[in-house]
Length: 163
Image (tube, rainbow, N blue to C red; front, side):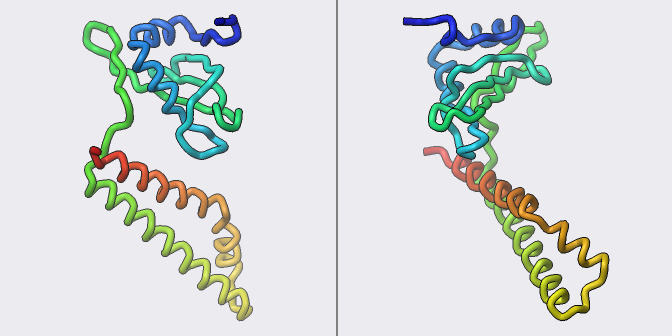
């Protein structure tokens, strides 16, 4: 039984694009959303759709944890002003994905090394005010951003391999 609360709500332009997508592709897109809490791909439920920056954005909740979940659907606008979707993510080559991961790892190691140097200078009492400020700026947020880069590189590497 379909109730009104289970029918997705879309803005008019988003509905036109969404309705042009075959049902099996719609279901696949809905199951490829990103959960902001689980930090992984999930199925979005109770979603709505709107146009953001010329593309369709699905917003809803994660089927696993009920946190906000999103799916950005890239739309390619054709010369005749019709729209077609770019399904999935653009794939990097295997070597590009490896390079991305290696760069993120190097950045992480350099930041950790600098933090150890500053910690040592602080322990010795020879740290300058500028270095104290730098040490304070090396935060969990920066570490988390680098971890996300590594995580993204791992996904890109996985996606670059056709199974």
